[in-house]
Image (cartoon, rainbow, N blue to C red):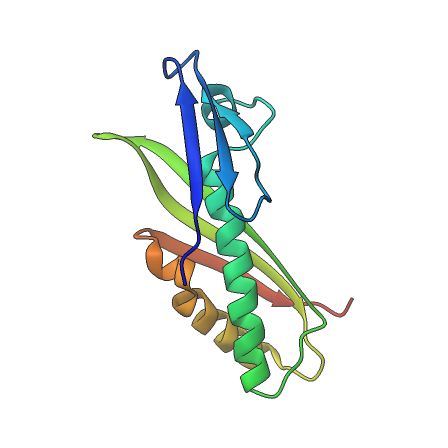
Length: 142
């Protein structure tokens, strides 16, 4: 299986602009710029997209692991915070924090936390990232 995406950039780093496109069409010449990446301008950026990919991958992995344990989640809500920092050699993604809330009928806190830890370690996006991944996970009633 292979998934494809492309990026196009025109101009200098600060004044230029680019666009991102995915083969699925979900992103179609979606704009990004220095302002959307390093400032608070409206638009997307690579780190935001990594966060979305990680949250989605983790949620699916957690659902699978819970299912294998006999639980069917009603809801898994995962938020990923990707940290981009200036380091000696330039900028680097230095960590990801996953904040997970889930409604899983019949699951105990211990079983849920074990499943969440396995998902954090095992989802393909986690495996692709060479950074510290931290997590807060909790069961909710509604």
